Image (tube, rainbow, N blue to C red):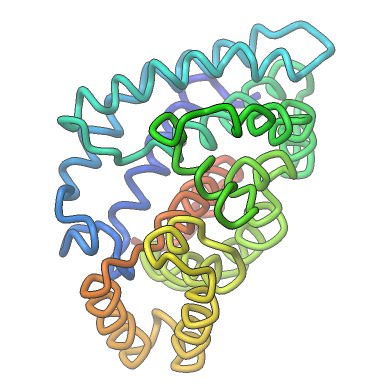
Amino acid sequence: MLAADRIVQNALKALLYEVSVTPKPGLVDPQTHGAHPDMTVFTFIDSTLSLERYFQACVQAGQRFAGSELTQLFIQIRPLGVQAEKDMFAATSNVNTHKGAIFSLGVLVTAVAYLTQVQATFTAVDIQTVVKKMLVDLVENDFKQLQQKIPAELTAGERHFLKYGKTGIRGEAQAGFPSVFQTALPFLTTSTGSVNQRLLDTLMHIAQCCDDSNLIKRAGDPAILIWVRQQTQMFFTLGGSKTTAGTDFLRQLDATFTAKKLSLGGSADLLILTIFLGLTFDAFAATPN
């Protein structure tokens, strides 16, 4: 049985691992702020530590839940996420570092915690099944009243849906995070190299395969995805993170993203979830730093 404190530690480590990976196109890392001039790696550290109580509360909710309708478990943790956002903004002087991860990672943490109290062992498939049961009708419930809201009240995800018809992270979550479970996690599990190399390659694989809503928002055009997929294909053609050519290309791409104010923020959130699951299943146990 996975101990409660280890689940929380894995969540915090997932956030810290992600921001530590370098070089990332348009994203904050120890070397650069990318396309986020209001953030540094230290902003992310402060943000991460502010979320410890939130993940502890999610674990407690998951391990104590005794009902049969898992949608009720999600209803229980949603107010916790609202408070976690307030804690994050207080820790970062109102900079949005982890709003997307608060929702998505909170769901995964709760699902893992729930499974620890209903069965002795579990797989990634079991976690995905719980997530799907927790989030039944999430998109319909969240978006059904959008037309009645004034524009200033809309969240970024709601504006994304109205403008492009894309359900964003809510649709991804309701489907059980297929980009993570079917794409990113298998890739990470079979990847090789140092932790940084494995996570860089996994991030670029996510960007190659998924519709990054943050990227679309910053570019103002979904067509940006075509260009990004061409860049990720070039990165892997050059050998990825384990070659000098691949790493040099990534540094150049980071400079291009920064100049164009583009960011793989959505892909980074999916990487955080992938790292959390990788830690849950000891995917880094024998990996050199």
